[in-house]
Length: 125
Image 1 (cartoon, rainbow, N blue to C red):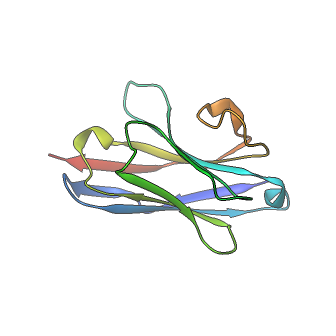
Image 2 (image 1 turned 90 degrees about the vertical axis):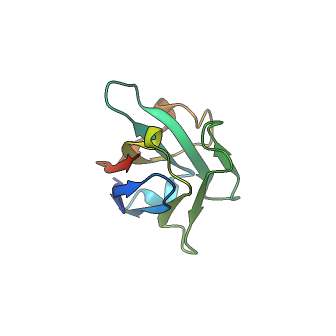
Image 3 (image 1 turned 180 degrees about the vertical axis):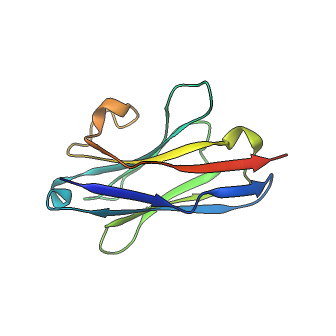
């Protein structure tokens, strides 16, 4: 199994920056390839934010966050980060970390096998 624990969420003002973290552990984690971030705003479906390939570092972003958010991992590749710059009220959501055994269709939630509990990010105007 794989355990994913997000942290770093909170209440910020528009224009602020925030960094989310996701600590990964578990016997099966070494078999994962894709690590990603999704978010879900109230009343909306969960949407893809960004993903990174643990093997080769290839990154993927949703158009809505490109040039605003950056995904990264630490050297052991056991902690996933999401650097969020110039936050807007529409970025308000619960942000989820996810891990998958394959790098395929990473913008789809179904591509991931493991999920964290989520961390709330609220951006005030």
